[in-house]
Amino acid sequence: MAGEGFAGLRVLSLESRRSREMAQLITNGGGRATVAPSTREVPSGPNEQELAFAVGLAKGQFQIVIFMTGVGTRALAQAIEPTSPREQFVAALSRVSVVARGPKPVAVLRELGVPITLTVPEPNTWREILETLDQNAERVGLQGARVAVQEHGVPSPELYAGLSQRGAEVFPVPVYRWAPPEDTEPLRQAISALARNEFDVAMFTSSVQVHHLFRFADEMQMRERVLDALRRAVVASIGPVTSETLHEYGIAVDLEPSHPKMGWLVKEASEQSAQLLQSKRAQATG
Image (cartoon, rainbow, N blue to C red; front, side, top):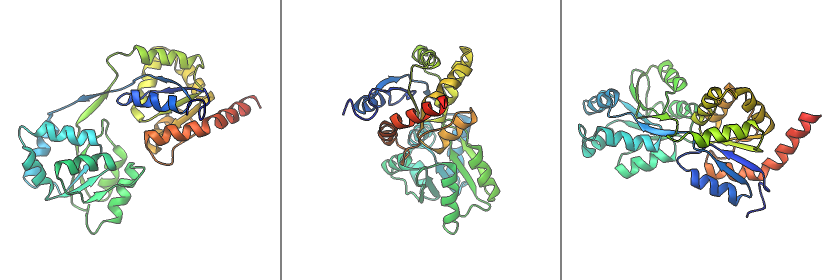
């Protein structure tokens, strides 16, 4: 209910694809929402790696395929359809071990009719992927296997290194890349407002949001002011991967939700932000 939860705190989100939903969740949680889209998914295919993957899959050259995102799974199927029709693609995947990183790729794979060998549990980071493979080594052996990985916007060097250390040959398949929004003015305005300490809470739902925030803050010569503002505000991160990125920029994370989902993030941030903010301010003045 409005008036509860955030209790009128000023909340910044850089969510793009679900920006309206995010704004509504914050408002319903009693917050004063500012949602400034920071990213845009740009299809990168059909590219050379996608076509090589389609050919290799049809020829039985891969033993394992890891799908990282639902959007990327669907985009990959669409990108290669001219050379690998949907039925052929599904049939080829049915002959290999298919690993799905969480519920979103699971949903798309089931829609396509692809059998799923392993599903990676929350929080769906590269660590859980490797742990799941280690726990199922008898079913899905990595030693000597050729593993295709549908990239989720950016490479995952830790995952690739872990697979290689276990004896696998990794074949990344970039499907889309992240670019700034076509209209960057809302993001720039949000950065200016953040630098003026006009937000009490900042919520991040992906690492690329952090990268783009500082890319534009640098262009605007506001990096230090933004860093200072985020150290004063409550910083909520959707999960470990995003938190690691925030830490790389020198930002402490005050809250991660019990489940790495947008709804849980907003709900738990609304419940805890007032107390967290009071504690941070008391420490700053203590």
